[in-house]
Length: 410
Image (cartoon, rainbow, N blue to C red):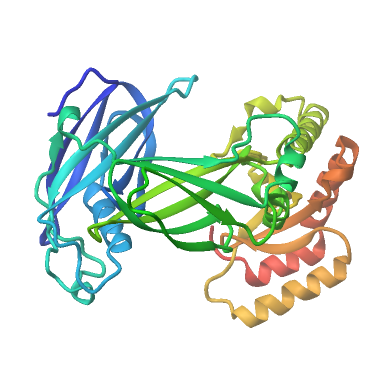
């Protein structure tokens, strides 16, 4: 087992799955953890993969690292022939989340050398589903790692103050590259996370210069780009990343790939976080009134801003969906033998009959009554009224008739 004076230990092993051996990485911590992940990148490429596993708290976690290696290779090697190097150098960032109430994140970084199982194989002949047969990785010590040839910085960077003014006044970035190597050309692709828009630039530079400044003009200023994301759907992000993928060609025509980013403030974060607090406070007040219980006792799902509970055998969910707050009351599973067109027509007729009341929808193959709320006028009185209306609709003759015709076994 590879050991360091770090928060956990890792080892690599192979396990036969059907007719093939697959490569795994076991992460062993000295305390119970409920989640482990490994972010994988390939030396000199911008491709990346994250393998994640979670569940019942344990001291040991197993990650399918071979699948992550293969995923990075498929993204990195776009040409017909894969990388011609006999060995591949992968960088691993491993994180473990403790199961105690603190939910502390333990982190280690390692670099491993792996024999290339697809050297000289045409990309079209690579396995589509099965991963190639990786040899056991060799852990590289820090002193054996190559020092980065490049120092790359991005400006401007937001450091505080008027965030709207910063975003509105930024229409370009400057990428500064310092290098001891003589360089010939830069190809830069810049893009805001979650956004399809890309800014591309290719520029030749003086090989004798040690430092280079590349101006990346944006098609719209940063405020317009952030507005285009949709504020509510990205409200969980306090900051946005603007990524820069660089392909650097040196004087010997060797290509070097790097990925850096600038962090932007999300100007909508604080306001939406405050509205989420209002939604949570309204639910807490309704629980006190109706059940004399504390919302803190609810099971909170992994997605922040969502609550789920059961009362008298009925399941409920409440939380944020796009730019609205929604309340779900689950009814029952759909009968898989029912005609889909017939069920859809019946649901439409039911919703027309209710006209403005709760809507009957599908959620995970279940029939669900749904209410949507605008966060602008959310309060406990209205939420309690909607709770009562859901019960009236669920107990109505029309609902009994619908479920009698189309409900299956849960």
